[in-house]
Length: 242
Image 1 (cartoon, one colour):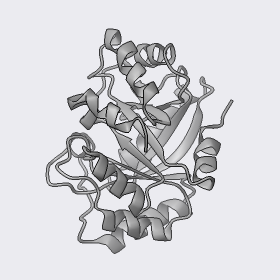
Image 2 (cartoon, rainbow, N blue to C red; image 1 turned 180 degrees about the vertical axis):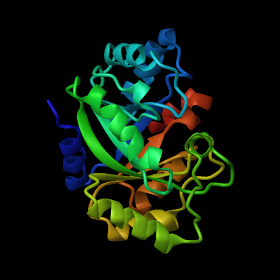
Image 3 (cartoon, rainbow, N blue to C red; image 1 turned 135 degrees about the vertical axis):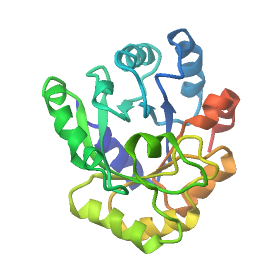
Image 4 (cartoon, one colour; image 1 turned 120 degrees about the horizontal axis):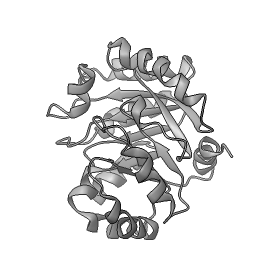
């Protein structure tokens, strides 16, 4: 049943905060999945994202299958490449890197993905993806060969997000990048949310409960945490309640 986007929209309607835990297949061994997911299940997490910028082929599907043995949370693909597509997941964020001008990540990878998607029952959710500067060069920047958007140019960030909504994106994702020194600023989040009517996702650089709460207060409908939990799984214990 294709209901992930509807669930996101419903949670917004009832003013429920939404948290996604991002798992990189390159950084999670299969025998570590069960104890990790037990911690996730005890947290306030609403979704599990699976993906990474440089994941080798054949790592994603076994990971997704193992995750789904231990949770009823929706598993959503957050792919850096078509090799990460698997029908074992519930949904796919069909990401368009609108902050850059590399045609491969604006439309090229999407065309390559179609033969795979034709063979799946995945819920495909068109998602605008904006990489925001954070103080360091991230893997996303290196792989896509694109430049992050400057936080000094908030109008450009807002206009880019609005262009994505008018092009038909169903979600908008502001990303500081894996290993970011700092998260997307509350000023940027607030400015984008003020103009958008579609759900806003924020991720990258969020390492504390305070930063998480700040992102929600600024207007994020969903926050994604990845690196902070890779570095310290006990962070999940802080997320057992809002």
